[in-house]
Image 1: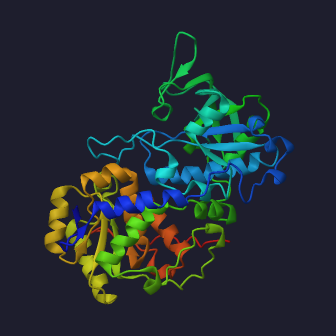
Image 2 (image 1 turned 180 degrees about the horizontal axis):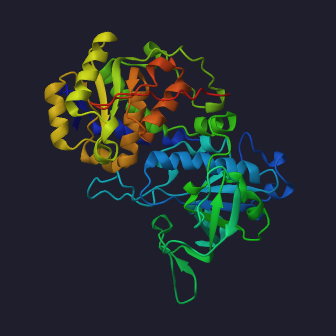
Length: 436
């Protein structure tokens, strides 16, 4: 059993009942749903065996929330490709991320359904899990692997242009060839996967720059490695927000977060005016209508940010001072803190900030939800706070901003960040207004 800071228990059994109780109610997965029905695609799309598969991966050190941003970019590419041919995006299994450091937990080959509502994703673009790709395409073979890289010569200021060229590989490849000249690599922990061809591409531009190439090759399955090298086609526009809104957290994780809110923070959707529609396409909430629970939400990034962003990350004492000021000004008595701080810093926070409440999972809950699921629960709770303050340039905080924007919070309660103890020009986050 997990105990909250106030000593109230959060039973694992409740979580298990939540998890298994919903499985029977999940709708069957379909590759094509609203927005991309078979009739709206080229004729080939109505025959599943003829569709083509796009796979992708990201630079290994990149974290969970940056990878969610790359998904939005690749979804835009799929929409471009669908104007001409029937494509489906193969969701890259999760695993081996820097922040997922819980010991003795199996955290590879994790399907997207562990963290997100896959039927919800498919209301935006056609998607399938990786193991469905293996079953549907005839085996763990990827016809063409493209490793994306920058141009070796760089680019001159003032001469930016979108371009793509086949070039010699700049960095040492993380792939090797076997006795059959197939390419072996990480492939999301699926050691049996092989790439039949591998090419390095220098790219400069948004995701659509690669579309003509993909439409003019015959490979049925194509993987883009280092996909973070592609930029957004329409950052902040309707296409961006449609994809972002489709990234609904898995229902079992949202329910665990909601139960914690109810038991420890006196927070419910009814009282907080944060009603949530399971079908994201039906959610259109006016900004300022959400009230939020009677608590302050905090994301305090530590670890590598302490030395990587020294000027705009506060000390523990500086963070506590800011939190206490916000509690007083907003007449709140509780603060929910999501942080990656080390044990010693957390103990210090508890001493200095007795109002602090955290979601502290047991080992069994970490094993059940994985580190990624625990992070989502933290984000979900922060997203429902009366007022939120995050960490500068943290993608974890960015994703909370977006979640609160979707829920309809006043931007003044969302786009806030901690300042460094000595920071003179403490610029606050930009408000990226939701577009429907």
